[in-house]
Length: 273
Ligand SMILES: [Mg+2]
Image (spheres, rainbow, N blue to C red):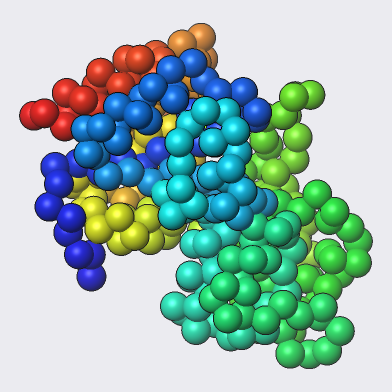
């Protein structure tokens, strides 16, 4: 049950493509977050990226001039760990993932197995830039023996300094192909991460504004959770490909902002209404 915070609105803000591109801050993002704080609007950064801990995400933001606390960050890794714990899927986890996911699972008291015996209850899979055949074999074997399959996020491709690179969804596709088990997807566009994020902030869906650059993940998740959605044309979606992205998604965001200055004005207005 969500304990309401009594405010008018709460913000759920995507990171990559919305406030930064990799190591580069998107212009005005620092000022906007200062505005949000000074207006007293509750917010959470919600990211599908499972590779970093909330502490590391906050440090990354601070490094580019955006004030942030670890508790203001909610990752698909935290949501995946919360889901495994709440659904009581078991304590022995085979984790394919990086430090952000491993720490999140351990913080929920789950134990990370090397999969050398039969005791694996759950395969939890996120992005893993050291993914290899042995990990694939262990995951497929555990799933064929009946383990549950949880995926942090379905992103097939990610933007990088050298173009698009494979994401967690692409790694998961090989596990799915071998095991014929479909994962429970936790990150955006799944409503699971949104429901946990809403509860963490104590915000009702009708008060929530989900902000992001990706029609499929950010806007999709906001819609699935019954929240107001705002697309910013600063990342995956741009003014050049907006029509195409909307057509591919099959739905529109509630509002579109071309940049963070426009977003800042819109959010201030929503807060005053
Ligand atoms: Mg994004």
